[in-house]
Image (cartoon, rainbow, N blue to C red; front, side, top):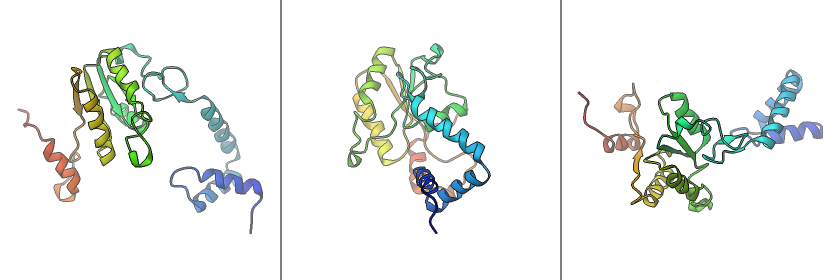
Length: 200
């Protein structure tokens, strides 16, 4: 039995979300139509405003609705340390941890020649300009520990060779509370390569 064109359109629209297939989209649509109409109206309004008003920060490329995001607006965050991440969700995870107090640059992806994503698409030249203009002394490469993330980190480090900038990489390894027997080989290899002396 077919639904009305409006219901079909709603279901198809919900399928654009990651991990949402036909059945999940139908369940969401039916919930909104059966019991969540006020929430649906609010959701539609928020989506419309976000799609029209959210842009990239002129400085770090993070999501913002003004020229600068709230982090870049704080002068105390421009302290010579710049953390490079792949996505806004990575930035949020670091901010929620609460320890890092420097500035950011969000690549909005990673190098992937097979997908046609090169240095221009992720803003490498813009990143290098920031390093020079702001006198960055340390760059933390916090790209993901994937093949593409590692390649992106090495590419950026190579471009900064000879620029008198300390390049650091986030440590990757065994999670706190983890047991060696349950750690995969890739993570264990990174843990061994990133080992450091035991503090007194």
